[in-house]
Image 1 (cartoon, rainbow, N blue to C red):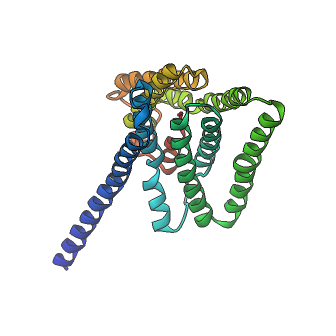
Image 2: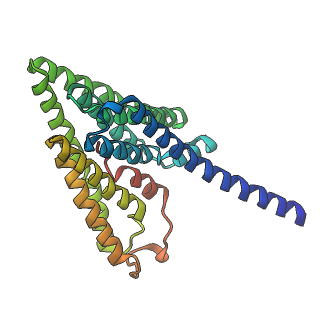
Image 3: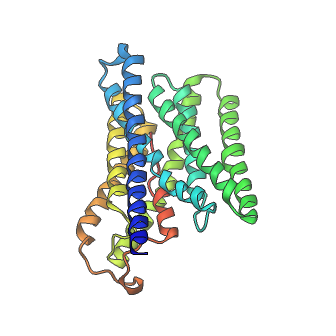
Length: 285
């Protein structure tokens, strides 16, 4: 029995390590592949500094898009959505879809359209998996929300901008205004997370790496937007950079503080909290 238990433990440890390695290798290899793709496909524009910054921004955004892979691996493995929520992925799909259209109708913004097109595809997979494994009552509610936010709203937004404005520049500006507005609204989540950190004196609701990537994502895309003279990218990414900086400062202040208001001083992240982490940093690109 002793040897069997040891064998099982060794097997679980190896499988856990291998799954962690595979989850890291896939996004990294994909990111490097995309870098080579951009360098080969757009070599004529490589002299522009904004191109290099945009490629770096693409890599960071791709890694952020792929960060929930582990969550959905759990859902598939357990064949249940448990306490996970679909709204973060539905909202990200909405934002990615609109930013993709914005990149298409705006000259010189192909880096915005490509990464958000990839993001929209990934989010469609996430939402589809959620619908497949969700219980019946939750499935019906999710389908309704998807129909409103991911089908009806984008169609109305695109149709309205195309019918109301005749030239592509005005259409691009109106879509940029919608995209930037949606992203700024989504920043209610980081504000809520920072308030929770100050109230509880605990950073358990605000993991370092998520705050760091919010900071890094905002900084890179903010620089790209400045080089491209794109105010619709600059404003929300500037907000993201500021919030990311504030979160890192809060993390430095409270990372060793004694938590208050937490049950038994627990540092575990519950399913609801883990799910909220994905939506707390709206992806801007």
